[in-house]
Image 1 (spheres, rainbow, N blue to C red):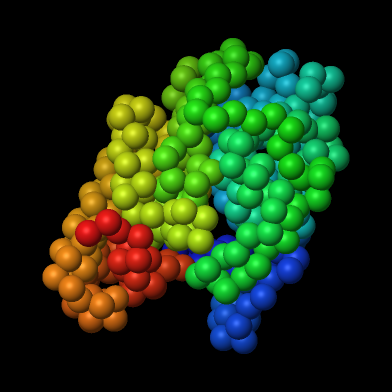
Image 2 (tube, rainbow, N blue to C red):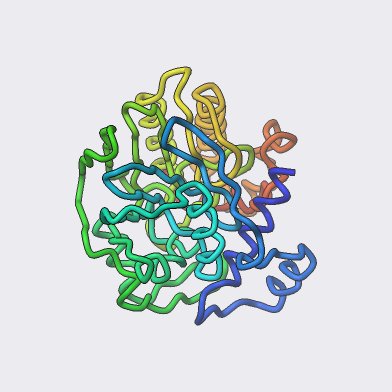
Length: 314
């Protein structure tokens, strides 16, 4: 069920933004999968701590913190999902606070930032890494999807940015934000709620299936491995780890994911070092031992292995 939902979510990602240029093959696959409409799917809230909630609909996983200092939301799904996000927030906070609201983007992709403009119109200030603003401000090319993404409107752009680290004291907690070296993209950050013991890793972590790595914006397998290792260093066995996609994770599950990435990386790097072409390397099935568990999501094993081959430093 998780893999199927994640596949539908990512196929929607492949079609959602204005200016998309997709091959007929991708359109047929999306239609066959019955990609859900983000505007009609309710956003489900799961309590993680006294005032921290996981929000899940179509698109990337979101986290909401409530309190007298104002609402804090991590990621904003797709633009059509904004009414569903606001409904979920209203159900949790029936009486709005007059304190300022803050939206944090984990990276630039549209399944995490498409709702930026709508949430900004609802009173949220947007904070992100500097490269997220840069990516959203200019035309981008999604190599894997053969898709061109046009610049976002002014209201969707982060107005507060940082480069390496940023700390927020809000609603009785301390939130540590830190930039990853290029991994899923070159704009990834994590958000660690110290008191609530909640860690949002964005798309550094895909729980239960092979991850998408956006090589068109500097994503690479070595950065993913380094990022998941950094996540492990921050987590305890009790930490609630929020992946960009998939169910809520644990440190043990993140460790298994990290080990899978590292093993596939070493196998593919060895084949590449031997001089095998990408297709020759894929024919060796370097992901075979993991496919039963990890290969049933959006990223087919050969597609994932191909990205590893193209981005690994052998």
